[in-house]
Length: 320
Image (tube, rainbow, N blue to C red):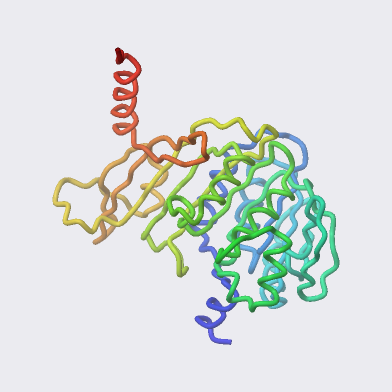
């Protein structure tokens, strides 16, 4: 199967090493345990994300074990060979579909992809790092799409990564850390309100990074990174940090800070306009807040200050 056709059919888009290292570093910043950490990549492909996070864990002296799933035997063989260099406590790579392997609470239905038997993976993992496939469920075929929708209670035309979010959440321990790359469509579209609601209820979101049109890897969607900690209290939400990075295409002619790579822009605390070679980028930072209906507001520092002044003024008004 040619690469373009394979990506279209399976959503398999490998994570480039710089992006894998960036995501791993964001996860590492949230770790504090000295116990052996169990790490999962539910769609591990050639093992780039597992290799990246394990290298950083080993470098910081963390004991850890690795688990990975992939339904493509060729990808999994490559991952197995690459991960042989990793000094982990235990490495388990499974040729199968993770969405079939996960056992959901009160589950009444099993998908049955590839004949993989049910495994009890609920709340086993301390860390999940993932770049799940980018596939609309209808691409899977009507029968498999219906089974998937029934198992994960999916409505309408949704992306496969939503099922992965549900499955990964059920595999993560309380207070476990997730770092995931998905399409950024769920951040603002009305049809993805259920995704935002699910994430708000299940995670204390640490950081959200909208990579927009930066084209950091060969995917057919605009990507976003989410780093979160699984929480017990579904009704407790606190503001999180967000970064938006988009190529500047509006004719901005002002000063730009020079950067070697896009990752240098992401790693600096500075915001504003940057230039990498011939391309210009605009970086916006601020606070991600959640209202009572689970809506998300991504406001810059200036916008937060401005809305705060409006709210303060409105609260002082008297109506007679």
